[in-house]
Length: 455
Image (cartoon, rainbow, N blue to C red; front, side):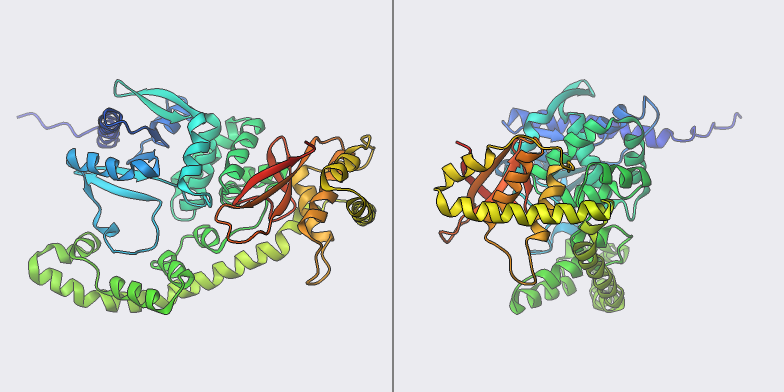
């Protein structure tokens, strides 16, 4: 009797990858038939791109759909036999960036946004849609992101999971080895357009080459508390604890805590093997749940406090790290130029209407001053023109930056805009170069441009 040959190493993983590809093609086809466009974010679009045919397994299918198509997409997945994961069944739980659906060992993550993106989901789709191209997967043409879009997603994935999972960091390190700086600059522009610059930079800084690139691209070293929390392997409950502390209203917080202590049965069955052993197992899991939460809560709170400290330190000390490379006398000269320009701007603005003032301030030949990257100069101007709690109106600060950029040869525009959900008549001013927001902080994020100067 001949012995049965063992499976070759990696065969099970390879077969699972093929099942993921087949399911991806199936889901994309069904969505397309229902009039729903989708974008495959990772998986084969990364594996075939930066690994030169080498084996790089992936365990799920990440699809981005428009927010308006989310309900139809979920119904389509359910029609294909996919069931929503129980861990996502708590009403009013902290916001997830994807809804997870399972069919056997095949997992589909249905995204409407990504971690670190502060723009709304519609804006994310609007920015990424022009970055689509097609790739054939299991015989079906599937929309994937172009190289700049994929680099953007790799950095955000590193920021999201790089602290607890080696694969996002390995992918990023491999991409940094082979992709040119211009491509990363284009990815950084995508991040800026959707308000995820901090998360993008934090993802890059997960590895040494990325830290060097973030300095070269002059990316902000500031991080939010959520990103700071994910930069290290977060303790159990830490992300949820952060969301609880950021939630407003005592009643809302109390309701969330109650739902966490007594979650739906579907949650417990996925959370605990004990709950899957019939009624008595489920009852014991309900008894164990509050004890487990009490046991884990102190470490979660401690992790959030440490992350908050890192975030505050990045806001107070981080930007100075980039400017510290300027020689001392260059800093003094730049400080003097900024205040001299402020005096010039004040006089011009008082004498002329805004369009004429912008035109006059723009009539300057490029001078042989020290040239700085526009966003870096915007941050410096914002910091210098502030004394304690006092700072000039945003219009004056923006005009100073506009003038300095014109002096160093950048074709800048002064932009006046209003908040997207404006409830007052207060307008805001910022500066753009080639339609990229360069500040001064907080720039134009979350605002609708209404006028641009020069006309």
